[in-house]
Amino acid sequence: MATRVDIGGFVAHSLAGLPNPPPITLLLSKRSSLRAWYDEGESLRLTTKGLTDTKSKIDVEYARRPVPAEELQSVDAEPDALSGSPSDPQKDTIHNLIVSVKAYNTVDAIRRVAHRLTAQSSILFIQNGMGIIEEVNEAVFPDPANRPQYMLGVTSHGVYETRRFHLVHGGDGTTALAILPRNIDDVKLEFEPSALYLLRTITRSPVLAAVGFAPTDFLQLQIEKLAVNAIINPLTALMGCLNGDLLHRPSISRVVRLLLAEISLVIKSLPELQGVPNVKVRFDIKRLEAQVIGIAQKTAANKSSTLQDISRGKLTEVEYITGYLVRRGEEVGIQCVVNYMLQHMIKAKERLEGERQGNLLPLVSRDERLVARKP
Image (cartoon, rainbow, N blue to C red):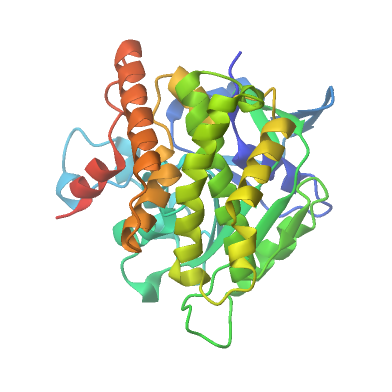
């Protein structure tokens, strides 16, 4: 049975259940997903504690890749990618976009709809890892004047997909949201109406249990989750175990403390957290270890997303979790040798498993993708 995480579908289903729900469109990147939508009765199902709720007032679109200008006359181009009328939904402005794809797919996903986004649009990123927005800015929105308003979200809900468009809400949680200022030096924070609308709409949902935070408060929540993921995800993937198997094992505890010693030092040295009250206490090694233990206990029977990706021979998000911490460490003069070793052990394992399962093409590292994007 597949257990693909689907936070995007969960958010869509939750918003569709609101009184006077907003119009919702699922953007699908694969034609096979579009076919599956029709095969499943054009509906999204969510099962919670054995009870299934079906939402059908949801639209779908196939978000195709943009055709480069030099290929417009090519006979190999998709016919529907060359057509379009004033009423073509592929040209309609998107006012609010929620992105929940794997971190490494974000740039490709946004490129598919970038022509429909304006500086007045808002993009909410609800994903694992950090450093994603920097990649989006570099590859899609290099001009700050044309950038949409960015929002970030972190959720602790446990949601997985048993088959396409059939979701299971396996664990209650909460959702933290923040609207990011366009310029961190702005004293007066002014946000786009689209972002304020999206924030109000999501916080209306009792299922999502969402709360808005100031950017600095949210950043600490986000980094806290990143630190926990940087322990549980790679270690469970490397050892092929459930989250709870990390507990009460002295050898694993020693490894966790070595990793956290580096992580704690990097976080407390980040320039964006300097001057923030209680940072040294909040990100102390012992407190972070208590957070890791608490999450491992709460999700003891779960497989981490990194373990699931490895098991399927897919690319993991380790570059945006452990890799992000290693890169930030380098920026502040800290060499995270233990985390660096763990990062590359995961990359080696994902490559080996991908080769074993024949999934060779998707296995391209973050560094290789960034080099490929540069002219």
